[in-house]
Amino acid sequence: MSKKSYFITGIGTDVGKTVVSAILSEALEATYWKPVQAGDLDFSDTLKIKAYCSQKVRFLQERFLLKTPSSPHYAAKLDGIEIQLSDFELPLIEGNLLIEGAGGLLVPINEKGLLYIDLIQHFNLPIILVSRHYLGSINHTLLSLEALKNRNLQVEIIVFVGEENPATESIILSHYPIQKVIRIPSAEEVNSEFVRNQSMKIRQKI
Image (cartoon, one colour):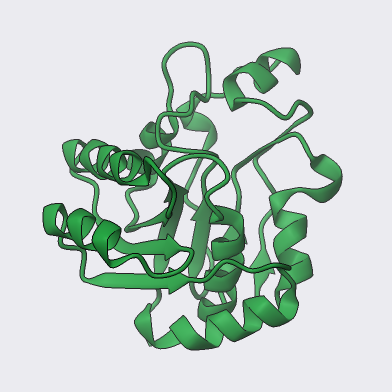
């Protein structure tokens, strides 16, 4: 099987991106990397995914661990750091790679205009976009897809979180006919069993 590398991003905050990252990391038996973690250092996204996934998943150290749970540009300022695009290099690893962003595409990384979409463009990997069904999600999803299209960035997979919603999904896909569509149901409790079961269901789709 050929090596696969993805950058996973969401249409906003709290759409289930970290849970989806855990499921995809398990399905791909990938190396997971979150370049910037802002706040929750005692239970970071990396630590959550370690708790959810098997030992088949490997992990890289975050490039920046920021103390304040806020936008990276502000958290970095409070820590006396200015994050630059040159601080990031695509890791050289064996096997599959999954890089997780923070929030949505236009989250600021520094005060000089650097945005997460700039980091995505810097890595130039196929993109997995996570959408969750809620009132307004069509607009947020189409805005995200349009922003990526304007940068000539390729969305290879779209993940819809929640129960299947044909009316929402069909209108999004009519504007952006992404071939690989994955659905992850909402879970009352996210645990290793849920992650393992979902990873088995989607393994052939990625």
